[in-house]
Length: 246
Length: 83
Image (cartoon, rainbow over all chains, first blue to last red; front, top):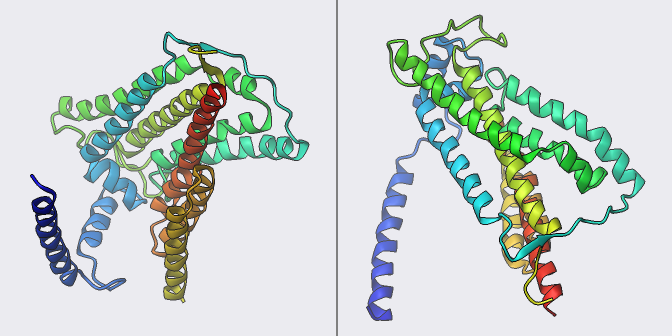
């Protein structure tokens, strides 16, 4: 195909896409209007299952299967990164030198670390009640651990971060989601159907049926996945050296 | 009032994103991306999507720039040894 035909094809395709997008935008409801057909239905469904945070209800009840797909994408992506960034035969490890940390940085990170960790766990635990949830809380908790790298040094981080355990945790959490879904199937309804557990009282920590369970599974999976991902990147940036040449 | 906040946040996002594209040095780009993450979180909060804002703050504001910086450091170390 010569460049000219290619350009023509791109132009035709682009024009078609642009026309469809414009047509779709013209039929959109007004920004910030009073009527939200999808929102009203979602809120009604989430109230029926005693889930205070409608977003959590959408993620882990109304579209739990969708969330399982997203979790699997993250899992597969992290496995791919771990495989790509592993130590190869022509590389060796250098123990990194302990670095000097400025006292204010050390003080700040050691004060913020526990606070950030608790915030992360809080966001996971209250996913079914307030904004946030497994994904957000998991990322916050996992990045909080790495304040130790800023405040102390790499060895201190390595001591609180047994990578093998996090690998197991990642897999266990992903399986826990699947098992909770299968429990619905065994209970006589459908995969990931939120009908097994009592819905509890509205706005209580144990409300929402399987929503808190799935939320916790995602929280654990994301936290472990982020720790693993950062561990591999840190390994490559700090420890692993190539042997070829010098 | 809410509209004004949305407009300001949108302008900041557009500005930050443009700067992120124009800056060529990956290290600076990572810093601009972190700022962009925070500004986007403000925008999402203003349009009443605190869930998305939280993810944006954690992933766009902290995780992505960190991964970028670590990759840059690895590449620079390799270059330093080759020369």
